Amino acid sequence: MKHDVNRNILIAVDESDNSKRAVQYVANILGGVKGFKVTVLHVIREPEEDFFPAENEKEKWYQDYGRKTDRMFEEYSLLLVNAGFANEDVSTRKTLRYCPSMAECILAERNSLEYGTLVVGRKGLSRKEEFLFGSISGKIVRTARNCTVWVVE
Image (cartoon, rainbow, N blue to C red; front, side, top):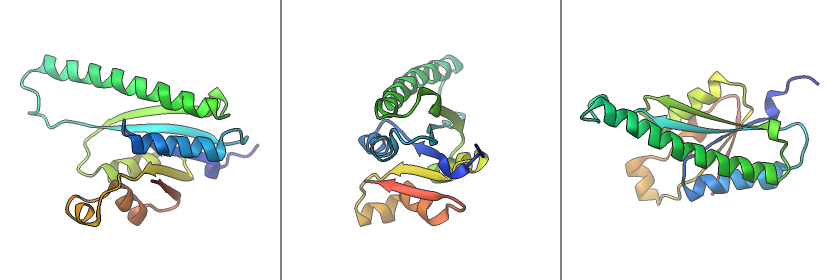
């Protein structure tokens, strides 16, 4: 079978209910349909250099955060597999990046890999909040190129 980028789905997640809904949406829509591959992505925003007073505190934070992310990946992967995705068609990826903009970091990950569809959850900000703080999903929709973007509310 020819490699088809459009059948590769990247779901950008965190531990929020919005992310879980995005994973559930993909599971409901594509679970059991052959030929789709899903990667669940979590971008870890690298803390500023002076964020931790001591190096051992930084290492402890990374370990604790890694365990929390692994539990989240287990939950999301199980959700996809239970919906009908084959184990080999579900993967996870976490990456530590300096992120002035989380949307840019998610798009950089999408661009570095071959995914035809990017799925994100919407935070549900009001128009005022979105104007003041920005919206990750909104920025992704405005700046993504050469892919389909699904924003799940």
